[in-house]
Image (cartoon, rainbow, N blue to C red; front, side, top):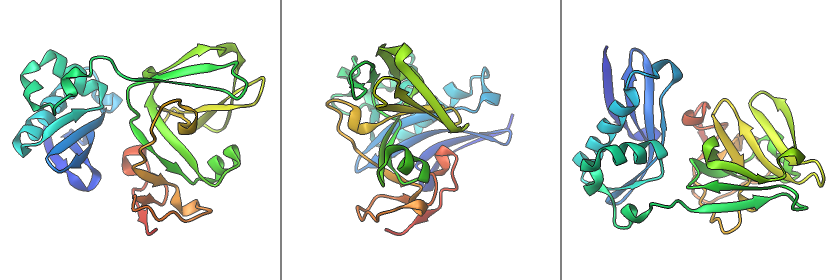
Length: 240
């Protein structure tokens, strides 16, 4: 088996190549710190210990870079539970995060309630035509969560689904029509609309589908023509 590990800073991720396929851990870097956001191991590499090898190589790289570590990725956090020798990398306060924060949301009439736990994998703004039409607004504030972080707590039988394409399954309340979330099977993530989450502070890191924008937003965040490469897009960026 031939593999190669690297810090791909242009894509903000650590990558492990295995027989022509890439597993990766996405991150955000700041002065003296790094936050590990999401781990992705392609299905064809499953059951071979690639995730553990990637996790170890990633944490060794963080140590070599001399950065303090913050963890949003459940896989990395679980890996560190089994390998406490890496706990010295954690930034102050990280060890105390035993209980992840839970945010609640619901439909317009209150018949449906749900909750998300932890932190979103990606957060930003979407300008695609479908989101514009679905939300009747020029921009959708999205927060993408792993499916096991989202739980319906009330009114599951009152949820209806519409999918215009196989990439997005939009969920809404049958009683009031209030929008709830969108499942993205290809990305294996769920967009729970940021403005519905009670007590949640939206911290966007990018603009998606900026090539379809109705309004310009000059906020200094990356503007992707479609999607970042990590989400299956071209990764091409546009000017504000």
